[in-house]
Length: 194
Image 1 (cartoon, helix red, strand yellow):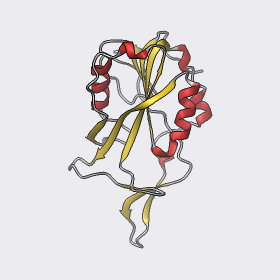
Image 2 (cartoon, rainbow, N blue to C red; image 1 turned 180 degrees about the horizontal axis):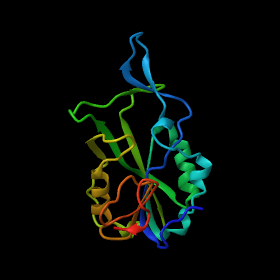
Image 3 (cartoon, rainbow, N blue to C red; image 1 turned 120 degrees about the vertical axis):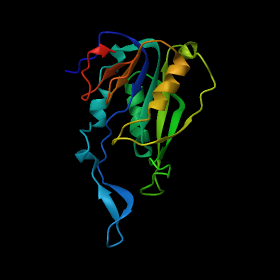
Image 4 (cartoon, rainbow, N blue to C red; image 1 turned 60 degrees about the vertical axis):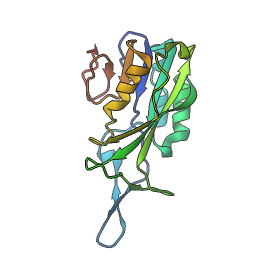
């Protein structure tokens, strides 16, 4: 049984552990000239779409709230299912993270069709979510170095703080505790606000 804090949130920020059924290819080449294969399942525990959809998010979501959810281009269709299952309506792309190496060089992975180097954070709402906005001058594009596998840039949280101010916020599938946020995930203690 999933246990979330007994509280309602006006901002829900999530990075679901999407399941990649196929291997990803890297821009690095093996000696034979083929792209290096990576298995994400070895990096962290993933979840099936059905299980992500069934999380009791409606129990912690305020009637007027915003969901910001990271996804990959390969999971857009599933992400829309999750948004709807959690009781939200898709509105726009909140952020586009253009991933950089620590050197500033663009990250590139081989995809099925084009080279990959970005992730998107979808924005969905319920209720009168426009009433939560404090500013309207936050840009979508984030250019930041990548950290550990699947770790998202701190700049995204900072922009969310500017957008919505000091209202109840939770990060789902969190990898670290963040001041001013409740954090839930198997890599944090899940005991609520910091």
